[in-house]
Length: 250
Image 1 (tube, one colour):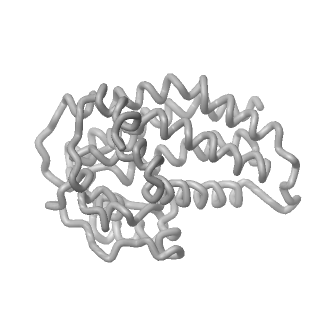
Image 2: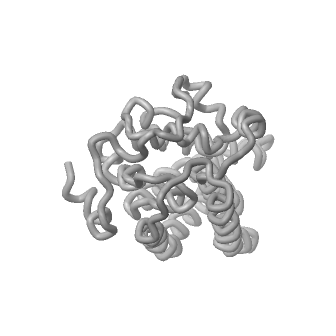
Image 3: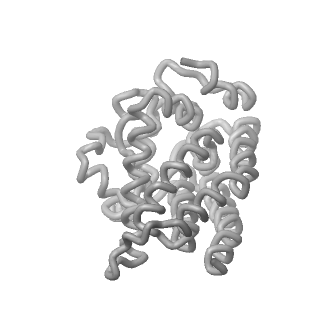
């Protein structure tokens, strides 16, 4: 348990440092030139702030309970690497379900309605999606008996990976191609945020890029910096309407 709290307390520091680094880098060397919108960034950070506040109230207790009440089905040969691989597979499946199940899409759509893409988009999620995600993940953690410290490490890796692949940072093409064979890169995830449903419903991986190849969900389209971001037929809204949107929009 002390290892978990050490990892959990370090998570916001790591996330903050990576966010600041990428936020500055994508303004020094952006992949796409976009008009800066301060109100949009504050909106994204406002949604992130709500999730930061509910983390200790909802996500943390659920995760601790699941990890400490496991039925003990964990094989003796299982290790942290397999835990992280399993959780990355879980988040791929969960992400894909968020696009396929209308009720889940109501919450996930808030993330996709962002009409620009940068590191702040990686932090823009409806608190309902965060709560539902923690409940479903708890079932995986409980069944396998994933140590709670590993859960905290995975949470940190997920946010860092999301900050990276949502960022509007310009990478050398060779570096991007090489990285994309292992992890999700900005060019891969850019297509996922294209305001064309065919592309939106593709490229679901979060950390390792292989899941889209394995499950044949990789888009055949390459990133085009002129692609319109957002939701096909949708429009971004102010923070209050985004918070209320899943509860009134069918």
